[in-house]
Length: 393
View 1 (cartoon, rainbow, N blue to C red):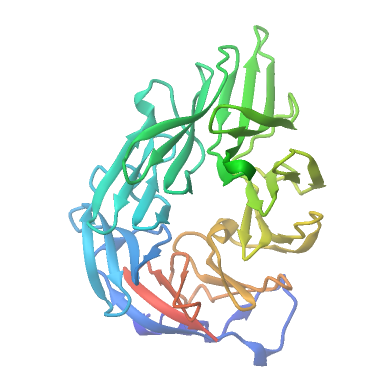
View 2 (tube, rainbow, N blue to C red):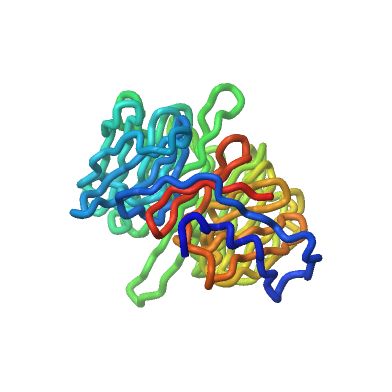
């Protein structure tokens, strides 16, 4: 299939059998508007936009690891950066001003100055024996926050890294207890009344006695960066054996968290629970916020929730591979995403839950698209190593 035909094959989009049938006059047209050939192998991780450029991880022919910026106006390569040995290469990218944060998960992360393509921070928390992390970083007011812990030593702390200075500061620490293995998430950080800096995080506590009986519970903690604790709720009681893999989300003054077969909402100031709703069990439920609306991605479904009650507005079973929905973009009446890594484009109507998918035999594979130019253009890259831009009509 020729590159010029990429995505234009979606002109005849097949409506999957699980969706409500719509008139054929209402078919969605996806047209390619731009193509920038690459001399490198582009990584399936979703790219990011920075000052009119599309940034993507890549490998050269001799397997050198790179970060490459493609100018979307001139449709040429703007610059490339050698990333051999970089912590976080190939992982999800976060942009904060002129900085890119790449997180290596359990090992550490790097901060890159995009103005001069230099590494500002390369921080490893595993240099302290036993320390690790399970959740991605969050950013607030020019600082990167990470929750790190030692499962065997019972230590857990929140660190902040000043992006400009590259300095590391402890912001919060839970009392150590050698009897408990503990896992502390990265905090959600917000400015509270009176100028305090509040940190919302989850803490999993595991205790195993001499008879190998495991006592596990998960706490929801609201603390200050002066080590004070504002309130603590038991999110998951002892012995429930229900892990929490993803960070909660905040909308205005409410916190939303999903775990196992539960989604719940809490007042961030008092810790009072607003509501709790049962879900179909999922090992990896993930909540997302787009344009003030609350969405849930589970094992094989994608749902919109009423943020005031937790009721399901609509729910759609996604096949195959729904995990790509975690990086969706919004365009008018549709959510757009690639189903999984280099996969066909999916368009999901957020009002009805109906979704459309390209014909696997005709559509080349793409990474999750990102919105460019006020939503008039979407940018992504393909398995055939091309940066492309397309419009939806």
